Image 1 (cartoon, rainbow, N blue to C red):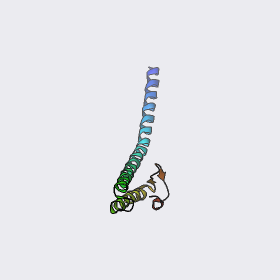
Image 2 (image 1 turned 45 degrees about the vertical axis):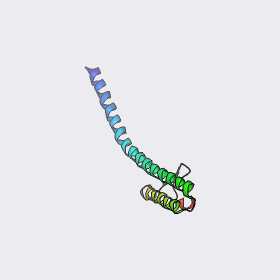
Image 3 (image 1 turned 180 degrees about the vertical axis):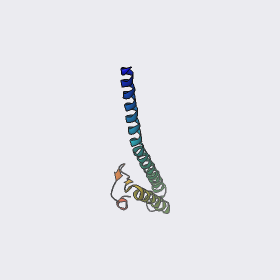
Image 4 (image 1 turned 45 degrees about the horizontal axis):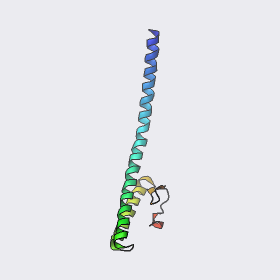
Length: 101
């Protein structure tokens, strides 16, 4: 009987710790999902800019429009996370995208 109580106590403690880790990990998972969504939006806008430049030229109206859309996505990320996904494939923590592309 004593060993059953011990086992139940261990199981209860393990479940409580597992639940605690699960609850603590949920905000981080949500933040990762939000950052991923932001990164994907920026990457999609960069792809549109690359296509517009290759099809119509660096200073074409299509490229300027795509560049504007890319900067809007970066601005959106910046306003939400104080960072943005750069063309170099990493997060930037300075608002310096006017210097890039």
